[in-house]
Image 1 (cartoon, one colour):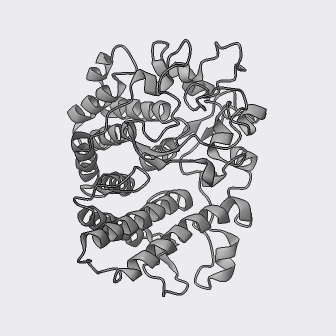
Image 2: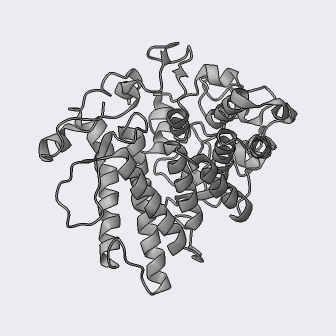
Length: 407
């Protein structure tokens, strides 16, 4: 990951490992989703059996989810007429040219609206599957990213529906950090059964996951890179912005004499055994979505659609278990309110991959803290091409309709 941090290869579309892997990953999910959709009658079919409706809804939700992440990773920002990605809606299509962003977003919106309808009444057997609530949140992300017309207001409505009717509860203090003295409790962001988790992967020994894993990059108590010295730590500027009374500050606490004081997230993400380098095969679960991000997205969409009262309410609710006094939020409005929501998104969802989405959709620049190994202190604009992946060389070589990337 050094090349990404150094920003040296983000504009080099010939780097196969950097650009092609992400491209291949999401287009393979799209192909798999299209296989399911074709098997159930095709793009415009509405299956008769409820079971088939639910499967069709899941396939369309996953196809839209993959296209959404492709738009975030491979396009600098939403520009309706800019050609960004090839669209595939069935398994019989040959290589396709890049479609306009407006068409890609229209497909995502249609897929997710269909998915919500098709999965109405579906009760999934576990959080490893998507349901209508997951589709609503993905749709909210898509609309907030596009931000045309009433998109933000609709994103607000969708996220508000999930908050009020989804049945998920916000993290307790124990969910956030466990017991701050002896680490007892349910913290660790490591268990899909956590009430605030909406969607994730229940990892078991059957998967055989070990060194090359997200946990290996983030957890000091897993036998891998973080433990061995390749530190992934919080930006010290962001850490300094967390008030001392905020329980989330202790997620990166440096007071434990047994842990190097490098601002590692060792009280946010950890194997429950808490033996340095102890977890050899990964049993701690993967988190894809939790209700806190829905509160933050709702607050963001509400603030940007003019409903500042709801924005303040949702933000205060999310922060209630984190800081002792949320009354300062009552005095926020306009840019001050939007900036606070963005800051809380960065703090709350650190290490979970969601601040990147907020940066792009709301066009925030990034300033690196002084503890970065490479280029500390620099400011990087949200539209800097080094923050976006390139259409890979293999696609340009093998698809005669695509001659260049998006940058």
